[in-house]
Amino acid sequence: MRLTNRKEARPSDPVDHSKGLFRTAIAGAGRSISEAFANLERASNIERIARHPHRKLVGARVLLSPQEGEGYWDLTQIGDDVYVVIENFVYKDPRVEVLPGDGLIQLYFKLTGDLTMGVSRTELLRLNRPSLTIYGQPKGIDISEWTPPSARERCVAIVVRPEYLLSNFMGSSLEGFTRLQEFLTAAEGKFQYLQFPLSAQLFELADKLVKNPYIGNLGLMFTEALTMQLLCSAVACFDSLSGLPAEHYSPRELKCLERARDFLMKQLSPAPTIRQVARSAGMNETSLKRGFKAVFGETVLDFSIRCRMQHALMLLRGQRTPVARVAEACGYRHQTSFATAFGRHFGMRPKDVRRNLRP
Image: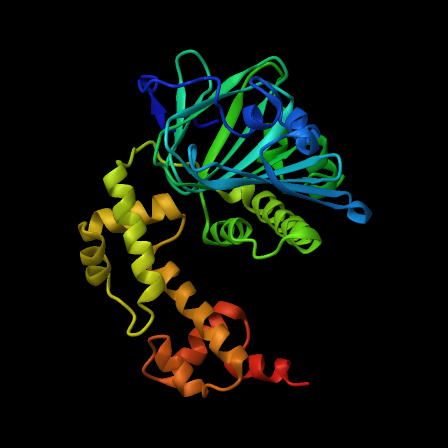
């Protein structure tokens, strides 16, 4: 099991341990995630709460006060086995919270932010770039989370029982899930984790969860549906994912890579060159290519193509833009070249999209 992103010194900023994060705010310091969810209806800082009894869904939003910072936590419980925590906040002061061991498995999809986990007395795990961190915390093993002031946290945490993953996502034979099975059935009494680059698909699904446009029952069902998609995608690709490299990226390098990603999402036509992307990000081409792949889990070219193909699909579904114009809007000079690329990406021709939309 690969241990990555290690820091040798603990955060030195003064921290008021009584403030904490969502567990402390809802149920008190040192409480588990299940205790926090059980206390939702009695907590004073809940902005809204919703229930969907038929589907056994409960959701609530914890809103930060202007004195604390800006943003919120969205909490959703799915049945008896799945807890979903959506983070979208900025605190004005550093926060630290103790996480008591509860025997659960957490899949932590980091989009942005800077969170440090104290996994032992001598080891810190820093999460400050897009990544998927999967960890198991046995009962009796406490860890701590620390977030600095002014760090925009955008993440999704899905907490489940190991038996839930084994029985619902991996099937009775467990064929094809060797690595995940080993992780879930590892010896008890030891904190363990794996960390991977956040693939484009996982990034997109987690980002949609953070941006949930609905409230009430619709919001609960939207969260349930995307949570199941995230779990399916994470389980399906678990054995094929490679651990994050040991190389550490500075905050400046991470910001440069994020600028590169934003540039690629906006510059659809003409398709940008590596040199143009590197110039927009403020880094050299070699560092860009290596860092982009390590941090985002795909190459610059693959991400550029995916963005342009998604834009093409949206235009084609509109049914008003001619295919030739769609090709041009996505950086292709010739319609035939576009059709070939589209078919390679989606497994169907552009005109098939229009045909499937006809009543």
